[in-house]
Structure formats: structure tokens, C-alpha cells
Image 1 (tube, rainbow, N blue to C red):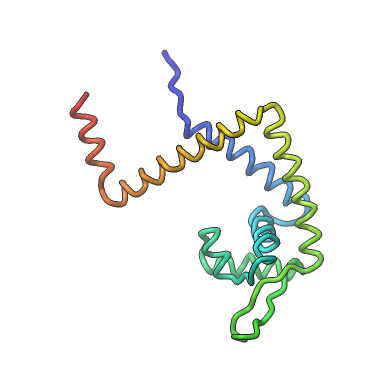
Image 2: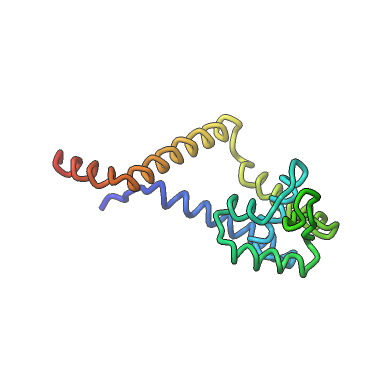
Length: 164
């Protein structure tokens, strides 16, 4: 029996391997993977603009209660502070503490090491090709999702079945 190749399966396996490493890197520092991603987001974006809870919710596609719980835990661990902004005291921007900044830098070193290992036996051309292929596959899935939303997927599938 011939083995069927499934690109989606291979993408999931690689993604899970990366996630597993990232979660271990975060957990070895005493925080969750989600906290690590939020810490890194605030670290990067916070230099450019004020970051609010709503930004975390929208960037990570997470619900308000999930983000509230995660941020409260991070605040309790002294990784972040919520600070009032001048133009509206009701708004609280998220700011890294020195402890949060140091922790992010340690985790970042582990992530950079993983990135180097990930591409260690790949040429620059192979890396460029990988990005190109991932972009094309992502576009294909976005189109599939929009087709599904508008009911096009079933019509295309029915037509393909008729053509067989």
C-alpha cells in the first residue's frame, strides 16, 4: 500500500516540536509558555508604543478572562506592572519590570539557540524557499477558510466529485 503524504501533518509535527521546546524553555524559568509569549510581546512592542490588555487579547486571539488571569499571575510574580496613562486614568498600560526584562532576555537566548539549531544544516536558499512555501501554504489556507465561511468549499468539493 502506497503511503500518502500529508503536508498538514508534517507542519503540525514540526510546530509541536517547536512549541514543546519553547514551553520547556519557559517552564525551566518558572513561567508558562503563554506568559513567555506575552512577556516577549510586551518587551518588543512596548518600546514602540503603550501596550494594553486589549492588545494582548487581539494579538494572541485570546479571551478577556484568559488574558486577565495570565496578566494577574504575571503581576503577582513581579514580571509586569500596570501603570495609569496620562490621558485616561482608567487605562492601564503594561510595563515590564526589571525582573520581567531579565527573564525575557534569558528565555530569548534559549529561543535563539533553538533557531540556530533548527536551521543548522540548511542553506540560505533552503531557508528562503521554506519561507516562500510557508507563505504560499498560508495563503492557500486563508482562502480555504474564507471559502468555508462563504459556503464555497462545499460547491468546489461537489464539482470535484462530479469530475471524477
